Image (cartoon, rainbow, N blue to C red; front, side, top):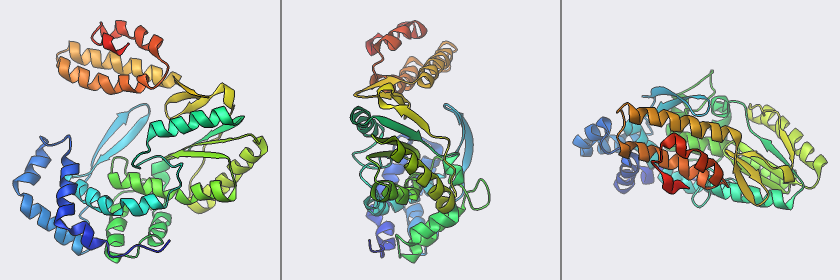
Length: 337
């Protein structure tokens, strides 16, 4: 594929910056930093436009906080002007990143997502005898800046765009020259892009029957156990030598037994809730109940937080589990069942 150029002018166009602003403030319109940006909207947009045309990204103004869902993660919240910049870049570069990906890569893509990946996984387990689940150790923290930049240089030839992307990459590290901040829109695209060559090798060189990837969660399926194990060996070597990544020990399963993938116990033709997801659900319900009972949340806030939890369970065969949770919610949401 030819390298893409002449993108900076598109990124800096006022129409694109207005669209980026609209996307960045979605769900956050009443936040202080959004209101402050809006007070001097024209000046802020013009500054952003000038910076982009100069190939300069004013980045790295992160607010750090931890979440424990289900394991400890450090989240980096970029400043609002940075988030506008991220959207402006990806509005224009989305198609270039997307065209590089195989059909069975499901993160950060229109018409894809978690449940499309799970549908494909259910079908694969029904069709093939064996399956393997893989993921990488501390994936975001382990991404090499140098390797990523080299990949971007082979994809884009616009020097100002590359300069901005390099500045965004260099604005964060966990160890020298490694790591992308969890929470940035750009990180989602770059982390997904980082494994795209591995995707092609699995499908086109190592000829695995089914390869499904959602970010760094990977499921392989085939009728040939030896071929699966051989593919894992190739992936391990490639990841270590070319990507500076470490694969966790693979989880091998007979397809009829199912395996945990993307938070669900994935079976041929159906989904069940994984044990960890059930524990997380109950823990969150108890936590939310305390906030409601202590008056820290209104009933409306409580329902707003409960609904996405429930939506997650509704995709699985989980009616009995939801019924058992009614006693925790004191009947607030009987319509779930």
